[in-house]
Figure 1 (spheres, one colour):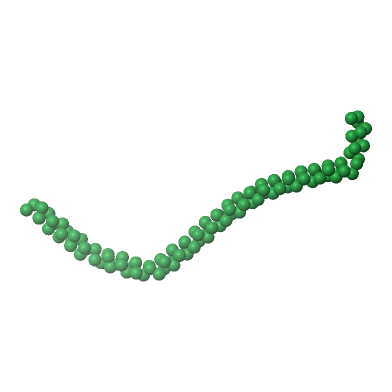
Figure 2 (cartoon, one colour):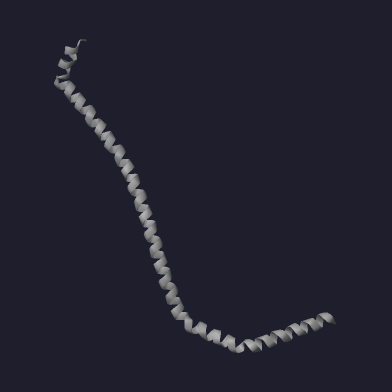
Length: 108
């Protein structure tokens, strides 16, 4: 095959269509592969953003619920704390008496 023959054969419509078909197929394959990689990158980024937003929202909700709980329960907690402080001295005496009784039982 000499050089003039292949140039003449490349000018035929069948060869031109075959070359066009091969080049379009190559471009399609490259686009498909790049689309897969782009999808993976977008999916990872979306997952990262979603996790960050979920953590922020969970923290915000937890803080609000903790504040609501404390606002609702604070009067009762304060009342119990004050009663405990008022009864602390009598509780210490009762505990001391019980300890003394137990020691007397152990000695005898």
